[in-house]
Length: 223
Length: 221
Image (cartoon, rainbow over all chains, first blue to last red; front, side, top):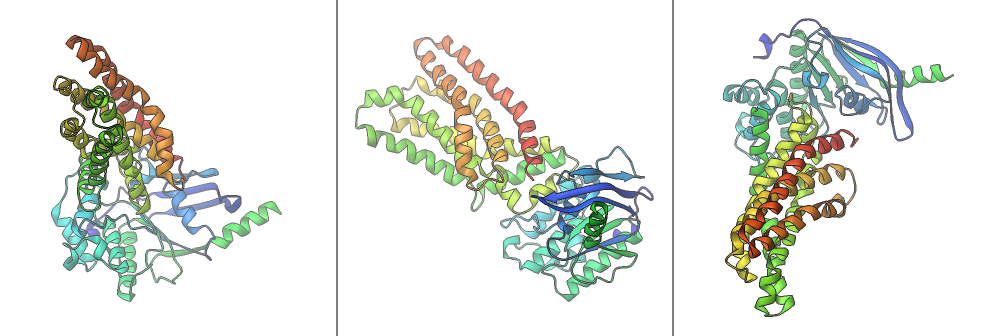
């Protein structure tokens, strides 16, 4: 499944002159970053430094104050959000639906072209080591198990860009290693992963980016 | 299409399932309508005269009770963000959620109406027109309710705000719904005009509301 995954070829996500604020506070301004495929970008920085806001801006949930996020390379007509998977603070699970039903729903919504493939839902559950929880309502799962279930969504439809906001939150050590392995396999297959994290995740092909640098650039520009 | 149907099916399931809105809406409808005879006393002629209006108002209030939740649960658990990353346009997502609300809430309310008509001594001849008017008019109720729900998603006490925003917009639906029943009592053919206007209101709101609701959702951050 994942290992065979390849994308339309090299692409890159270009952030140019990107500025964003929350309320009256500037988080980053005139941010220029070129994110090539096959790499993992690790966003670090203290709480409130704008990691989540940057990810949500790239995902298209937030309109940038100024600047643009563009995808160059693979199929320019397609909107960037349709090429992305987003793992946020909330897991997007319905408590009354079983783990499997939750995944099957997201598969039908995210991979709209081919109908629900029972095998790959099962594969995703096995991959995240939660196949024994398939028939349990998501509301009964622990926070870490719900996180794994959310991560399983990444495997349901191949999308080249993974946006992950603290993907290891609530996960145990084995879960954290699993995230690293998933990201490694994704970048090896030519995908791009952008993660915010407080842990030094040992991902391959990773580049760090400290959000405080974005702030510093701004201060230099202002000064 | 798969994605659209998946959203409709999931929302209906969640509404009917444990903790869903359908039980509350039906119960509210039943209780509001049963309170009217208690409040007005046993004047069966009076009840029969006001029955269509009372049933329509109660239906609007009951449908509104669950309308504010059309997007709230998906917003709270992060589903709405993921839904917006689907290849399905956000307008289609909101339309799917409106359709699911109509199927899972408005339609059961309409189907409960004949039973509640008995409580209000509704005239036998009025049943077909009343049900038809509700069937034709209720899509507007779900569609307008969804716009209100999308607009108040980030507001605290959004549910109460939805009522203030949306109830005035229900006025045309209510007027033509009740008018059609009254017109049918004088001449059977007389109901056609108000019913057609009601259909126009429903079609127009179903067509425009997805765009309004999607715009409101995009602007919410």
